Length: 337
Image 1 (cartoon, rainbow, N blue to C red):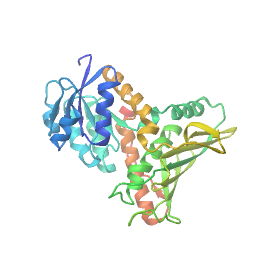
Image 2: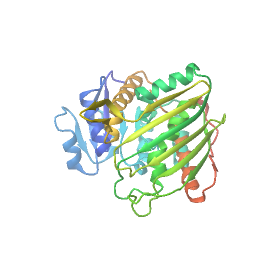
Image 3: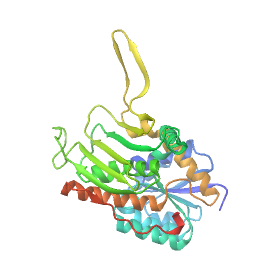
Image 4: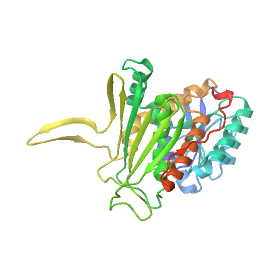
């Protein structure tokens, strides 16, 4: 592989455009070689000012472009599977935004395809693992300085949701991050999911029950809960409290300085995920680039994408049944051990 990653970014929407800017201005060792979008004008706008980049409407055309040697997938999840197969056939390093695929069955097929290749090429975009506070909490857990981790309490709040954001998407698009966070913090698989539906906000659109309370359990019995509240109005807030045998650790919440002045006090609530996790995205993509140049991956694997997809399926079933639902996982291939 060339010393420089020449990346085809597939998808030039909100997330793709953010990654294009990141790759072309802040990431070392990589360049944008191509941008693909069904809207050619949007792809052309995305490459404006990027020397040598081409705008295309076909992912296959980008992958066959001799100037491309890596892929960043930022399309809607239902489009990921076929792009992943084609990129694996090329043996390209891949950074795939979550979800790996929309369901556990198709995610497992991707795991099988990568296993057949014999090496890990897919990194899944669970960017919270690269957040400084998440990394700090992970270090506390690994060091054991506060004893055993016993419980995790998560809050995930958005100001509002876009049109078409369904009840199932509270699990598949939002709580999916907490599924990965719990697995990251504990180093264990989640064994069961339960969803409780209480009093709903008047601000939730039709067909969406908001907020929801999600209860998880891991292999060793660590309990975790998630308050998912996606029409909270006041801003974007992601926070975690970890309970240990010998202490409590809090991360996330409000950002910036806490000010007292002229009869008032307070701070700033971040308006969106880009503000809260912008630095984490930078670290994530740089880690992917650095690892890819060594022939490795630098973060969550295809197995992690599959395992979270299985958690999401259990979560959606639990939304409907109200019961504790077991997470069904196939045997992990040796490639990921």
